[in-house]
Length: 235
Image (cartoon, rainbow, N blue to C red):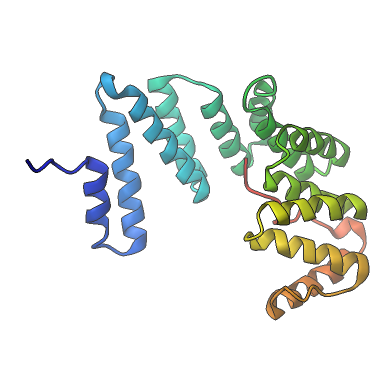
């Protein structure tokens, strides 16, 4: 007997005939429709599909769309630490840092504690409240010591403060935990350029030239520094 294809598989096959951007948008639209129309017996699966949709939107920087879908998701299935974390990420990405801070603080006593500490650290770093940012980065790295994004962001904050020892330790951890992440390698190379003047031989020439340019900017008066875009968009 030939079994019918699952709805998401049919969607995926149909998407192959379109260009990548159209295919991706159709996949998101269909995920939203499926999540919104699942019968009660499939509530858990439907909720998981909706959570995956919101996560994808955040990864694509479609942050306002993510907030809209979060409203629908929580209206239908309720709020839990996972959706609170997604909402905090979306609020932070849209510049509503006060709301994001409140959501992160509500998560400090639960299973999302490390991600919440990381989010708080990014907010305080964006406000140039360095001591608060460092406190939350330290807490996040203690709670999730194998998360390379936390180590990378802690290392970059240390670079901003001229704390070479912390920068070296944190950025080295990030690179070794995620050796294929080019952003982490570039940050470690920037540390070496700033601290010793040496160019990392493993970095491509065009990246090395950009790092040299960044290093010159870093050597300008501190009032001209902005929060680096290499800090992660997550959590």
